[in-house]
Image (cartoon, rainbow, N blue to C red; front, side, top):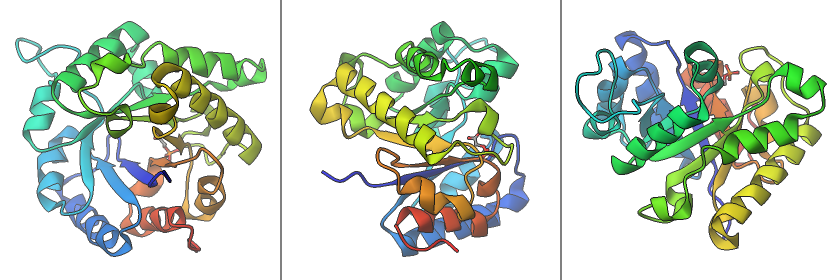
Length: 257
Ligand code: PGA
């Protein structure tokens, strides 16, 4: 079965209510394009408002707590994210790993909370420049991902409906540098093999693997045409409807420029 592409915008710590018009424009354009699944992860403060604008796009959070509701000042539980109608959560983003020391044990607990709340997961992985310079990126990324992949039995519906993986080399995030097509293909191919081992041929082949790291309308066509690249996780270029939709258009196979 061909995989429907998914393009996710991660607004990170950007966006005030003034950005709701961009979210609306993205939603309306996504309706017109149709052939691509489009999603936005705004900051928590905008989650409810963006969800209220969304007729076509899927809306999700950039993180969730490893705990259920209770006395955890400043945290947001997965069940609270689901309560505002959001559908997914990003987990394991390199900025969370780096700035908040998130490790595999914590991320595993977050995954469990998200699954219990009925949220879909977008699990991020990626190597630093130092790891790539040593030539150890494949082993590093596969180990990082394997450590947080839920067991098949933890999913209440089919794995591929709930799980998406995003490969984002840390040195490509927000830097304007992208991995070469060969490097992206090689890594996505290895991730696909891991997913097939973990979940079996039928499910493992249907899980979407996104590429992230300085994806823009200008480079999206080439990246999204690579085998085993089923979409993109986009930071900076998702803050404007015009550039984000250029990437979504590229995912249809049409010319983005
Ligand atoms: P970028 O961010 O597109 O700004 O490089 C990607 C990400 O961190 O998801």
